[in-house]
Length: 122
Image (tube, rainbow, N blue to C red; front, side, top):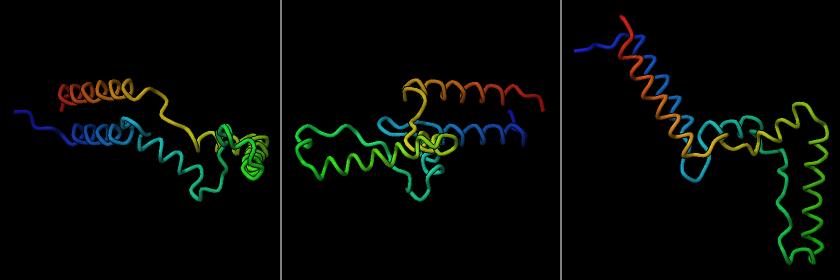
């Protein structure tokens, strides 16, 4: 019977935790993406570029003014460039791949890691 060494156990634990952290749920972002979103703006102080104004709200001057103010705040920070621009982009970042593709890749990494740990010499 194979008795895993410390290196094999640590390899399996680290890759297993990494997969849990990066695994995307079906309709949301992974823990890794959520952590990045939070890390760039922990106080939730950065504005987010608003969606297009909904049909029918164009006649409401208060809604238009609020939408324009939020857009102006976002644009002013975006034009600063550098790290501020990157933070605005990372605040709303999503997972880089389609969730089903990402799950397939992560499953492949898990299987290959298990086979590598099994084949490692002690």
